[in-house]
Amino acid sequence: MLVVIDDAWQVEAAEALRCSGPGISHLMTTRNEEIARTFVGAGQAVKVPVLGDTPAWELLQALAPEACVRSIGRTVVGGSTGRAPAGR
Image (tube, rainbow, N blue to C red; front, side, top):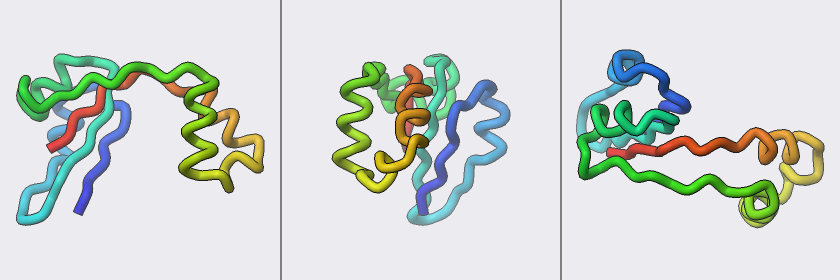
């Protein structure tokens, strides 16, 4: 099972959503690198560069073309931010 914690602002809140057991993985996004390092450890946090609007739109078109038919696609891309994902 994959547990996704999006845009964590406090490590305590992210920890409250942590599940344990066989086959459980976590993916967390945050703007705060310290939260990412605390949640998964310094060696596991991965910083992903921010995509500009054009590359983000092209990626969305490639992965979810049905979302691009509606105006919501541009809203999603326009709201992209530099969140540092952390996975474990």
